[in-house]
Length: 219
Image 1 (cartoon, rainbow, N blue to C red):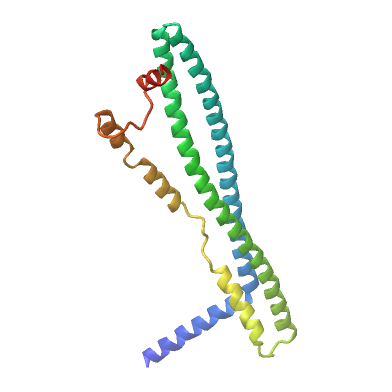
Image 2 (image 1 turned 120 degrees about the vertical axis):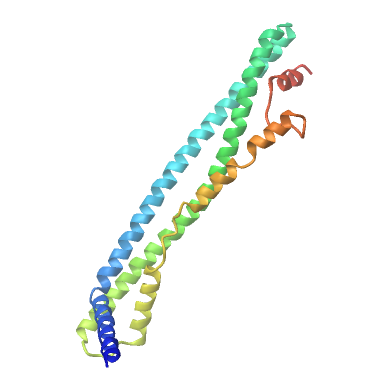
């Protein structure tokens, strides 16, 4: 007896919830559209910041390259005059510049990969937002028809339209930071170990040194 009553109560609650959802369907769709649009705007801001950073780093790399060429010419001139002390000091500075240029170039390449992926995500989210807005217009038209012909059984087209809107609106926000964290962790792994082994003669060096500069420019 009590089990039957409990089933009836739960069934009544479920029907009431569905009725509320049906009454406020347009409001719920609009809310999902606002949330999707807010997510897209946040992604656009992140994309703009990343683009600005890529431009800044690219300019820095270009200046480093120009400064390296200038310093190389000066080192050659000092070596030619036999001023090895000054040439050694300049070579150390050049080695630091070359290592910094290599680090920045690697970082910019990684940044460009992330930029490409984020651009695709922004484009996909923008298309989804357009579909949602078009679907909302369709849903409003369906609701208007239902209000005008109250009591008439909904057509299969109306049900399909509502199902499509519900499916699209239920999609999760794709902008997560897990992939960015994975990239950061991958960049941090193993670098120091490789440098230490190279310094002890196990494998080629991964960085420029002053001795390398002198040996290269003395030829």
